[in-house]
Image (cartoon, rainbow, N blue to C red; front, top):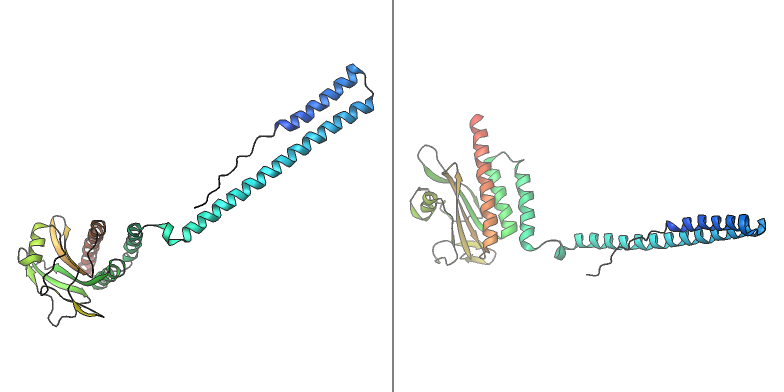
Length: 253
């Protein structure tokens, strides 16, 4: 992109000094060289006007050019800010959106609506095809589904215990898993194009104080880069904090 450097205004403060020097020369001419008073005054006035005019002209010229250059740069900056291609990369756009999302969630106190808002955001930013949130029952330690997104199966998502099946292993080991080679009959997602196998399945444990309090199952239409997975893990941490806060509020009520 074309850029202009701002011109530095030269220091012309010496020019009025020259005008004063002209007066001194004229005074010396009058006192020592004994020229007529008229000629001395004329010489003094002429030199003063000459240097002052130069001083004013040069200052006005450089200030105008400097202002034009500055306006050009400000205009470019504003143009860049409005140009999505120059504003941010795709990944930093996700970061910015996540930051706004976290701020907006603070207003939602209902746990179910809170999780649904989370799924909608993932759908918009990361093309989430299907999502399920399981929370652990504090009494019997069974993980039960409390919220779903785009889940159209006739049967409800199965409950499980820690260590049981794929989800139970994630809960036990406290480590997420990402699967891109998904067996055809393992999970199906429904879209406008019909039934299909997702491009990626992400199962994330929600850990609070070394205890797995929930499991996120996220199915995507396409596989994501590692940096996007890290961003979603960061979001899951915020989700965990939000779930704990809202459960505490519910218990107090």
